Amino acid sequence: VEDIKTWDDYIEMGKTIKEKTGKYVFGYPLSFSQMPDEIYLYLQQQNGQLIDAEGKVNLNTPEMVEAFETLLKAREEGVVLDLPDVWNDRIKAAAADELVSLPYAVWYVGTMKNSIAESAGKWRITGLPGFKGLGENASIGGSILAVSKTTKNPELAKDFLKFALMTDAGNDINLEYGLFTSYAPSYKSAAYKAVEPYFGEQSYAEEFAKHADSPVMNFGTNFTTISAQMELAGAEIMGGADIAETLQKYSDIAQAQIDQLNG
Image 1: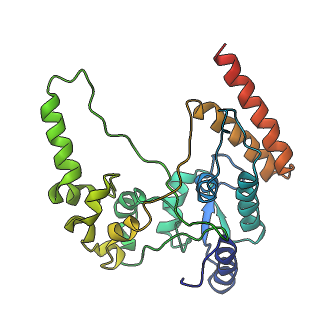
Image 2 (image 1 turned 120 degrees about the horizontal axis):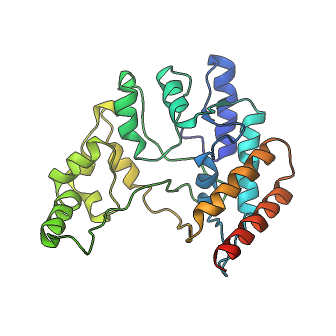
């Protein structure tokens, strides 16, 4: 694992593993029936964006092209398992020991412990491969924790947040379910150093804390519109269409839809 620095290294390792074991290094929906999170992961690792400095949709960037080229290369080299129903199929494949790695977010820990419990002790956490000359960190998904200004008990709500985010007891509960908070001072607490039997007594939280500083992606206020066009672009690209031309076409469509919505 220490020799795997880039996604190209990762794909080469996948070829060796596939040849010797018949197993796949990772999986995604090859037809883009659903948007693979890997696209956003690769894009973010390269400091890429979906919109430009003026707030206009721009999917046709060198970073996005590189992201798609990486997915295509993995498919062409035969190291990717097709996961049409990506959420459920990923769980089934991991449980069936068909996947040897899961390049995914920390919150997936809760899913693994709950849905792939029989694999306890087999998995370990390590940093992601990256792109040559760039960092390896990225952030996929996550949730927002907020207190409504109309709550009848604002002080009680604030006290709960302090417990949930700023105490070992609260973080013990969080980390049991893979809830890795964005409150960075917690990473130095005892809760984030506790070992996890599921990962062979490795402290998964401490390992993820090393990679918490990831590039910032501006999703803007029209992400739903943009992501819908991304899926259409991805399906065409995976079907053989020119990457740059297709990304430009769907950038223009997404921007036209946004302009129409904004009047």
